[in-house]
Image 1 (cartoon, rainbow, N blue to C red):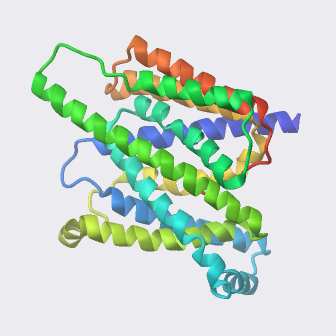
Image 2: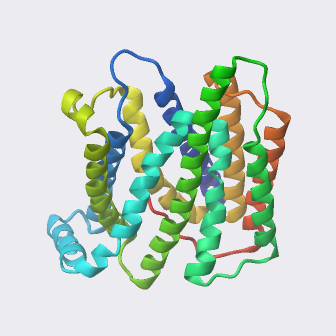
Image 3: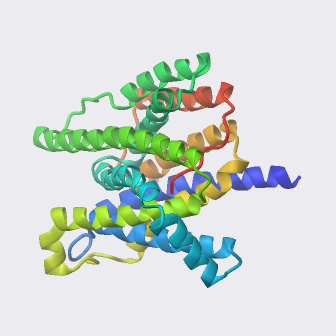
Length: 328
């Protein structure tokens, strides 16, 4: 009975995290308010900082709340193993790029289109795991590859509508930017995720310590990116310009969401994860249409969405791998 309850709790957590982050991020990037809008590069930096603090707290808890043990493990695993620590620089830089790209994507795409298209990361992760980890895909997984490609192709299918040509041109341009951002984010997510998994399997280090190492590099890369891209605006209005309650919710969801998923994912099998993805896509579509009012569904979009949902179940149907530690 307890196991069943944990499964349903895991389902609820997975659906809540994936849906709420996308919707709040989209709403925060399109909300018209007074003063400058918050900087996406700044939000990425703050999220990395919060992630480091959270992981330090989790390591502190794992060592019976001993400050001496915490200091010892951090020195031993981070300072005294510089080569192992430097290995995390590559996935950390890619994850930082990915997090910035997600803000770009959700600034230019509605939540429903983003949510469906971003499932392409399952495909990139599968392909990178074949090349980097030597995994073999079964019949259902290869069928998944073809189904999800066709599904996303339908979702991105251009639809002609009788309206202002100049407005249509601007909308098409922004959608193209959003789609390119999603596609690059999917590729970076697949590579960095498999690379991180490979490192975790080669060592017996705590996943929370590994996330601290990732966060340290991510913080450095994020600050450099913020200064390079938004340096003038940071100098003029400060790093926290445009921050409000909604911005802090987005930052917290981005920082802690992955850690929560890492904690509950062991209770969720492949079918449950596929079901959570499906519910999240459906909820994002309904909320985008009825509440955010930035999305007009078409029959082609629904066909593509059904194919993508089918593909997520196909990928988890045959394979029963060991749970992958997830990077927060």
